[in-house]
Image (cartoon, rainbow, N blue to C red; front, side, top):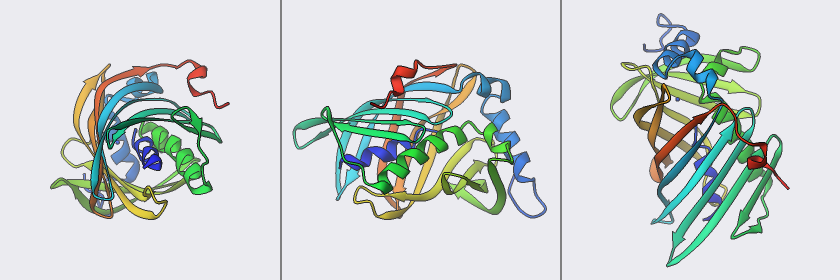
Length: 246
């Protein structure tokens, strides 16, 4: 259950794409405008959230509360208190560039290489969720795929490739231009590879930018994680001590 926390990080962070339709970069530019515009997104390369929700493990749902902080590039901090079988356990995960660290109830946890890689990738995903970095052709390669749908709403689908990132597919609502979903290869709590899909919804304007206040994650088509953002603060910067990996 401890490793379930990594999937929250990956969660943090987003016109039909046909050969004759909009170019991938145009889909991204439309999404940037829908999310508040380039100037606003660049103004806030960091942020903090108060979160809550539930995670399903072996058919049992466990509630959690917590907080998330990020700063691009490459920094993220998750603190998550999970209640299970009458007991509460606090998990803290830190990513600072190539360095990662996790503690459970204040004690360091051993992280296997696949988990470390997943945590590092979560920071890349956070940067990607700001959308405008996707237009940097030296870092990201975009290609259009067949149209899809999220919660029954038509969506343009872009395949994203980048160093330090497993192939990810971003779904953009055809009507609003907002990021509606993301599909990628993830890890379940047993460190087995799964088809992970995250649906973003209940967008709210915060500081001039549109923020999804609800995320639902499925593994191989089964509900795994639900996150509700109680409060989001967009920031220009965060104290480096927040992401200190000792």
